Image (cartoon, rainbow, N blue to C red; front, side, top):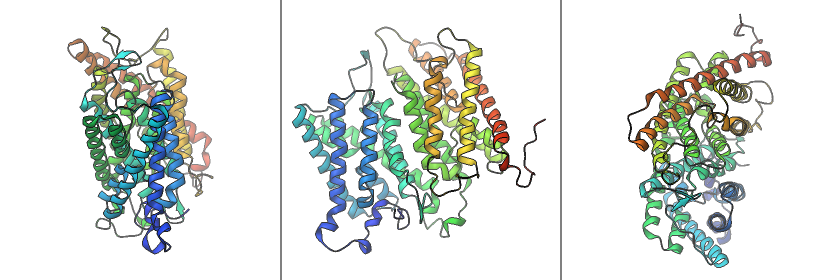
Length: 510
């Protein structure tokens, strides 16, 4: 595979003038690739919306993107989305003139895709909020739709740029192979929580095509404006977490680059916010595949920011890494990580508390979905044991897969780390989610859920803030921190070669 990041960052730079063979067909192939790839995505989106299964529609969309990006990446860079092309142009990773050509091809491909599914079903997919969600009423407005479209378009562009356009995440001769998987899985991460809010579009070409065929012009403008705003925000934060990609800030060898503290802290803040927001929106929107969606968020963001901050996004994981005592994360840095993670969790909780207030509910029943705490006939002892054990599994997997120096972790082909770590959320979520109200396995998620419950209850019942409910998130956070500490102990016993090289940093346990 070519060095995708070595000549300006983006995959599309592989088709630079010096590499392009002469001839009209060869020169036009990137634009044809963008047309065909966008056609595939919009056509799949329309078919899923009209006759697909809501349980699997976001997964189907995600794999359509994965296939298209792997297929067309070597030809055009596989933007397949005007928001991605625009974000790359904002940070100087893609020429503006070529960007407009890509946008024209993408819009044309999207329109063709919408005409094809309309020809099959004689039905258009309408943009805008649904009247009902799973037979429950909703009160979504234009700003709710704009919010989720902006946030997850941001995530899509941000993940693409970090996995495809980052110089350090695609070193020459050691390029990653997960770029398409990470990009496509954004549709799983954002697709389930936003499906019944906006339809999970995240693509201005698709918004334009669906808006024109359904004649929903007002909503078309709302979607496109939100998606462009998401692309701009992604370019701004990419510059913050990847200063080495900009020569005005760094002009040395990538091998010698040391990530600034501000970039690490911003990485943890962004990653934790997106993880907690995704987990919370899945809960309040009564998603049928919350653990799968939450795991996808972890996978995308670990692949995107793992080489910046380590990709913890979880205070219990940070505690485990600190206690493993191998110089990976010191006490001062670890505490800063935890503070930023908790802040991100609380901020995300404020955001999704709004969707809890206006989201799915039955007639006159006004209550929150899946409150944090024991469910059914289970009590706090069962919740405590489940959270401790599964948090330990999550933190231990992170230590063993992402921080170990033992083979095969040191090989260039080790690209399974993000998928394996994120899979722990799928395991814990499906295994004990009904027991504890979502099985956060993450103190930042517990804080976000606690903040959301306090605000939502006050909003729904017009009551004063029920601050005692915050104690639930304190208990959950405590269980999860215990799990993180136990993970460090188990890791020291199972990976003794990590410590016995000189014997100086072995964590002797009294």
